[in-house]
Length: 201
Image 1: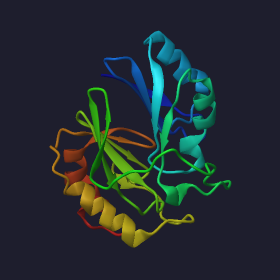
Image 2: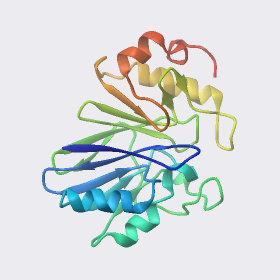
Image 3: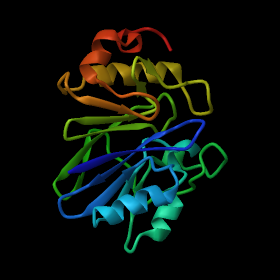
């Protein structure tokens, strides 16, 4: 597997990711950078985009979705929770091709993504685990957590979701790749993040 970090535009600088399987299939997570950043990377890897996984539906995480679908030579399956398909300024996408199953799996060649529902930042927030990497969107940040004061946010749900992440059967060395700012490890967050230790949002 190849994993590339692609930073979204200012001022929010969303962390987005492109994974390429051994068979040359590409999976974009929260694509919001200029579409050429992904298409150029796919061309360099001689890969084809086949899947887009969205941690939630906010505009700063989905900005490149439609352009990437149009640019792809074949079908691209977009995953997003229906709760975040609103078609408004905050949640631009109206529909998705598929949703998630809590505790379920999405298999793309040799890659196996485990998916967990983690509402709090939005009602349709999800986290994904694949090969030592935990993609946490705007649920868990390094030393912090996502906002709960926007439409669809809930402080009680966020606390439940963070407690769930802290208790996942994943090792402390698991990399935490959040939707914004720096990366961390699950062990670091378990030990030092006050929101994983029960502090209120």
